[in-house]
Length: 336
Image (tube, rainbow, N blue to C red; front, side, top):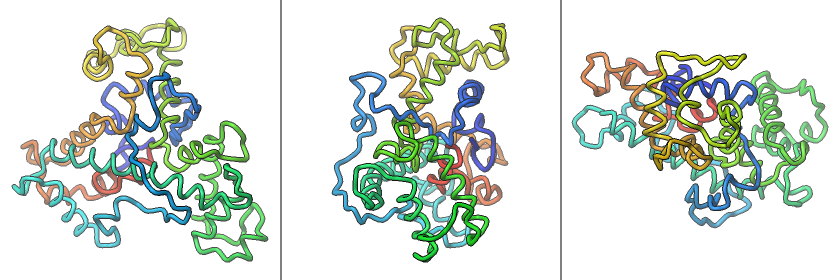
């Protein structure tokens, strides 16, 4: 997983302590995150999938076209300087020509929710548009692959007759197909040749998939829950272990303890259950936007006044262009 502008995950997607944990957690996961969990059962019967994401009812049309939420407000075909200038003005709510951490955090959180809700709303329509030959409630790789090639302007004759080596396609397109194939394998939990509706969401938008987040929770518990009681204590979260079970007390222990108390253990009982871990990891948790905003300001605030000017943003152009402030979808997909 990559962070803001190519930075490591520890300075961006999670707080200082979590990267170490997720390093262990992800070692065997691969994740694109597909973050995939994908069971059709949620962690707890009381946690409802749609209520958790607060997905609004929409009229799903089979011919729905995939959109990128960022383009609703900003045309990314315009030059980067103009794009960042437009976004800076949008973030600067009080029009004081300075962007604070709170303004940036609020903006990133808003864009994150828009992106995830958009993905949820589009998933059904796109699924129905691809599930055609036959229309049987699942999507085969051939159906998706046909759709993909068609969307990239490949002619029908090639689509019908091509071989798996794709000798007639350019390198970039072949690399994209290879990545899709790997992501497909991660998402297809029931049948390797087909994706259900939920699996299709995890395939295309792992950051929007509840099942994916559940997989992360399971993997985190598997790596850190030393007594096997399906919860994490503060010590289990804060004190990492190496191969033989030897405890490693690092300089970040106090930060991890603070993290556990303030952001994970919401009921204050000293243990984090699955639902608490689910909320903590959920990309829509405002803490992620706050952490990214703090990181962006820290790395760009050249006069150390705690706020950003447009000049400071433009000086770190690549950093911001790769962040959720500008390209929420790509930033998520690079991580997951």
